[in-house]
Image 1 (cartoon, rainbow, N blue to C red):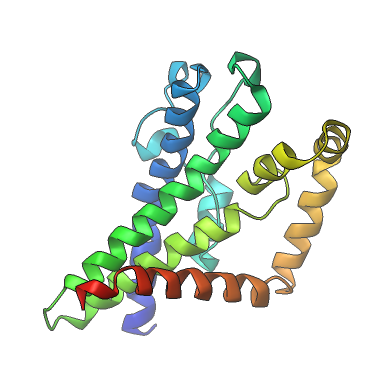
Image 2: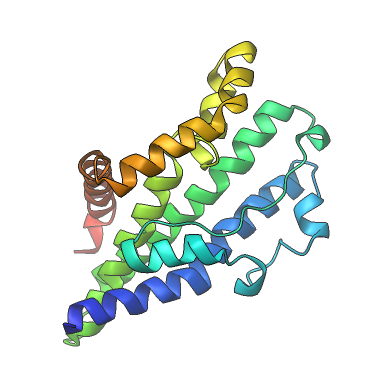
Length: 204
């Protein structure tokens, strides 16, 4: 195994232990701020990886760079506006990945040392966080993007969409396994990366 691959796998492990908990904690914190303490009461409003690791999702992330943690429980009935509350709670997770990627890009821009392994690690950190942000915004259940989509759908269409979520999920998993989604996801990841490069261009 090449040193580049070792660095990439090391960063993926760090993502599983540090960033996935941040993603799920962001969901729990957002729900708490909007009036639902379900996740907080179950000990999920924490950065401890033990509270959030999903074995299968973590394995996928380690092997392929796309995966997930254990979803936090949310009770929409506790929100003043259930649909809006679910949408805002859902989008908090991918937003935390985007913020982490932005912070990583700043660190990459500011790093002036000559340790190639460290610059490679920062690069992979940025890319994997963008991957997670983009992947989770795919608008199919149980991914976060589905909650954003249902907020904008008419109520009847949203109910039908959620009732049939297992079929949409199965299709997406099939597309992932067969690499059909690789090209559009790669374009999306590249686009977000270029935006972060542009946003930090003032750093040189």
